Amino acid sequence: MVNPLRWLMSLLFIIQMYLAMAVIAVVFAPFALFSRAAAVRACHAFCGWTLFSLRLLCGLRCEVRGTPPTDEVMIAAKHQSFLDIIMIYNAVPRGKFIMKRELMYAPFLGQYALAIGCVPVDRGKRGAAIAKMRADVARGASDPGQLIIYPQGTRVAPGAVRPYKVGTGLLYQQLEQPCVPVAANVGLFWPKRGILRKPGLAVVEFLPPIAPGLPVGPFMEALEVQIETASDRLLAEAGFRQERPADGNAR
Image (cartoon, rainbow, N blue to C red; front, side, top):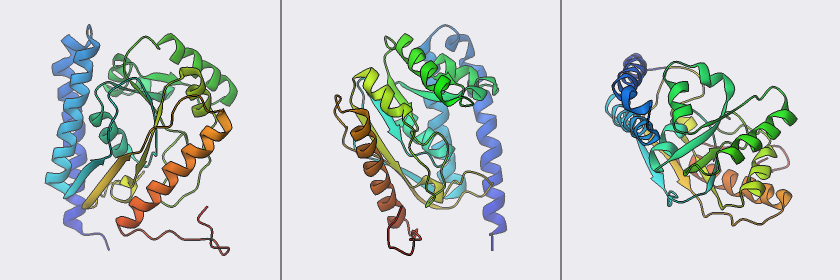
C-alpha cells in the first residue's frame, strides 16, 4: 500500500521541480540566448537543485560512481527515468544528448536542449533517423562536449528486456572516440511513469571506456554486456530480484 504522505511529498517535489525549471530558465534566458556556457550553467543549476530537493522532500539520495569523463567521448547509458538524465548531465562538464525531436517543442526544456548542443532525431523512420543523426553529429563535431546517447532508444523499466539499437555503434564508428558505458538502478526509485518517488540510494555508474576502433558488431556486444551486467548488479544491491526464465538465463 502506498504511504499517503510519501505520495503527497512526491507530488510536491514534482510541482516545485517544474517551477524551478521555469524560474531558472527565465533568469538565465538573457545570457543563454547568446552563450552556450550560460545555457550549460543553467542546466547544471536545475540539476543540482533537483537532486537536492529530491533528497530533502522524498528521502532519495543520488550517487555517481566511477569516473565521469571530461574530454571528448560518447557516453552510452542505461535509461530508466528522467532521473538518470539529470544525474548523468550533472556529472559531466558539457553534456549534450541525442534526443527525440518532439522534445524540441517542450517549454524551456526544448529551447535549452538545443542551446547546449543536443541533437534532435526523428524516431519514426529508423533508417532515416540513423542517417540524419549521423549527419547532425558530424555537423556538430567541432562543438566540445560529451555526447550522451541511450542505446535502447527509450526508457526501460528495471528487469525489462529491450534490444540495443545499431545507431549507437554507427556513431561510435563515425566519431572515432572512446565510448563510456553507464549503468543505472534509478528506475527502482523514480519510475518511468507515476508520481511516487521512493526513498533509497539511486546510482548511476560510469564504467571503463571502450576504446575506439572496434567493428560495430563486437562493439555493440561489449556495450550491452557491460551496461546490463553492471545495471543488474546495481539493481540487486538495491534489493531488486530479477525474474529469470525457466532455463535460468537472465536475458
